[in-house]
Image (cartoon, rainbow, N blue to C red; front, side, top):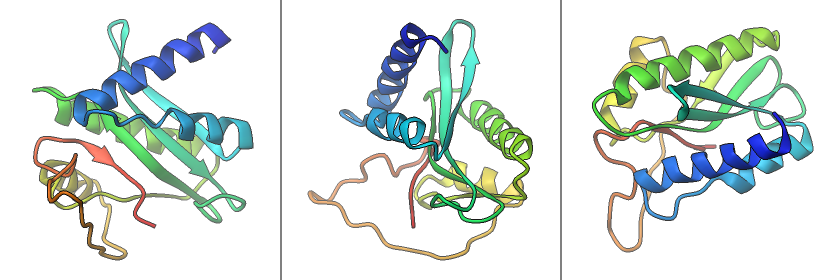
Length: 154
């Protein structure tokens, strides 16, 4: 992407995540992955806009580890087509992993995001470990039904 396209994409990603949870912006993580050569950000476009994206770490010198693509964060646009967009995003992540000669895709999801969790199970993802999140104030944040977000659980 050109520098102008990158700036536009970062803005679109911030708009997408802000619509999920006000103030959520993973732009610094996107830039860090690119600057440090840790992997790549994969995109799902629909029409002329960004419908979803995933921040992927790849390989031995990253959080992913050997032969693995680790989806550090991913999100799709909310709405009635979110489930289909999420499936498309997972397809793109799997294709990206294959293109990098990686054998596994790992990702974390809060079980409160019931639909996303069910779709991941249906695709063959399995639980490696469970954790607990606590929020102050006691609110669900973006861990709620109807939200298709993958986030860092390591």
